[in-house]
Structures are given as C-alpha cells and as structure tokens.
Image 1 (cartoon, rainbow, N blue to C red):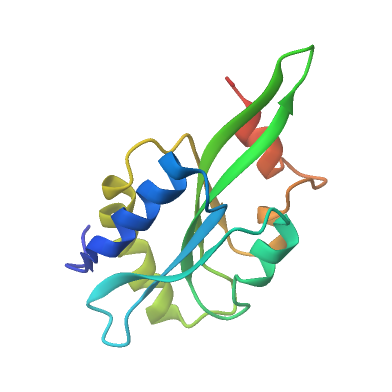
Image 2 (cartoon, one colour; image 1 turned 90 degrees about the vertical axis):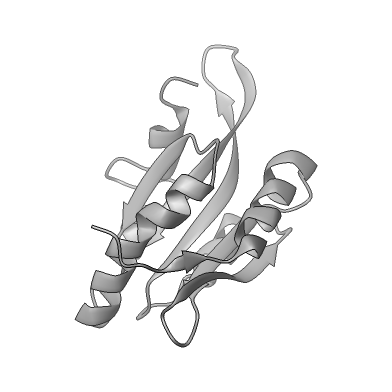
Amino acid sequence: MSSGVAVNPDCITQYSTLKLGKKLKYIIYSLNKDNTEIVVEKTSESHNYDDFLQDLPETECRWAVYDLEFEKEEGGGKRNKLVFFSWAPDNAKIKAKMVAASSKDALRRALVGIATEIQGNEFSEVALKSSSLSVLEKASRGA
C-alpha cells in the first residue's frame, strides 16, 4: 500500500553524498509538516553510533540510513554496509505510524544500494550490540 507521499529530491542527493562521498555517516529522514513529502531532517558526519541513536525521537517516526563499518570475523577485515532504519517507536501516535509504514517503500525504492533493513520500535531493537539479534549481527550476515 502506498500513501502517495513523495520523496524530496534532496533525499536522494544526500544519500548519494553518503554512499559515494563517504563524508556523511548517517541521514535522518522525516515527513514534512503536511505529511505530503519525505524530507531530509538531518545529516551527520559523527562516527559515534550513540549520536545517531540520540537523533531518533522517542515519540515520532523516522527513517534513516547509517553507513555501518565493522570488522568481519576470521580475518575478513573492515567492511561497510548501508543500513536502512524504519523507526516507529511504540509510543508514537497511531496515525503517524500508519503514514510512516505506508510511505516507507517510496523512500526505500529511491535509495539504491541498501544492504540491510532494520525495523525498530524501541531502542533495544536498534542497538549496535544487544542481547537479541543486534544491528551489527544483521549487517554482518553475508558480508
């Protein structure tokens, strides 16, 4: 199901900068005030994953792309994977979660080259390392 929400061209421009330029570490996307367009809310060069988590609001839905760098086990060396996050916290408004869910595919299709997709409803689900299947474990599969 599609919500009819458009993807602002700057979303793709900033994604290309992250993907090719390696200057950005992550991008946070949100809906504009009228819920008609997905826009870039923030870009960051910070390599601190905690900074990224702090940019995810506790009560509002967002999407994000994070350029995750990790060590492959057994001498595999450093790897990078682009991870797409769909953030819909449990305490977000129901209507906002519905619009975010139905708009995700438009953004996801526009961002070519995403390796891993993570759905998060609470911070433990987007933790780099956690007791459950972590972001790092999901990203390193098949690397």
